[in-house]
Length: 209
Ligand SMILES: N[C@@H](CCC(=O)N[C@@H](CS)C(=O)NCC(=O)O)C(=O)O
Image 1: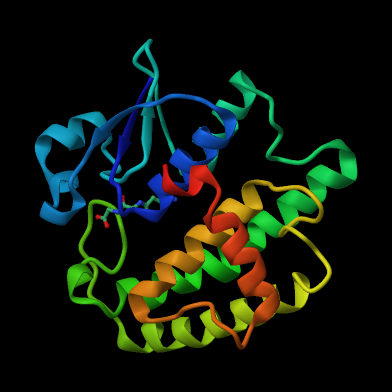
Image 2: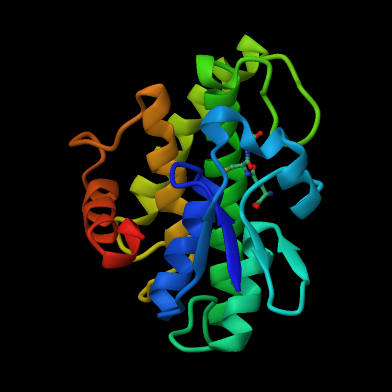
């Protein structure tokens, strides 16, 4: 199994972190987004969506979409469970994972991709170029603040994002917050519960994968 990857790409990082939590070794193949390698013919032949991550199985099947890759890895190695246990546990992980994506990753991507020079004319990932829209960046910044507020309140009486156990929702939350550093949004003393969680999950060995 080969994972097409880029070290600084948040969606690739979430797969690496998930695999590390599972104890699954992936053969990493770097696609250098810094020099737009994803736009070249060689990578297009591997993944016509021109994005990372992408998991190439030994039989030649390609899986894209970071959460689909995580689901696959979870099926081949169910323990430790990162998608929750039992009807309620699974529903809670799904609910909070969706929130981490829709209220964390998505606004952060809007803020980052519509403002910083690295993403000039590349406001959306994929084969087509899209201009940056400053108003979306501005809205994204406000929504990142709301995301931090949501987590601050929730983590007041929850150890992890989906409750008592570490899950894929924590991974998504962490990568969203770290991605926000590119637009100077950081977790600090004004949100102590969020900071407590952030410090705890950031030092898991998988966070460095
Ligand atoms: N929904 C996809 C999103 C993948 C995605 O946006 N990947 C980014 C890196 S985090 C990418 O490949 N960017 C290439 C580009 O900006 O051209 C997933 O979850 O895997």
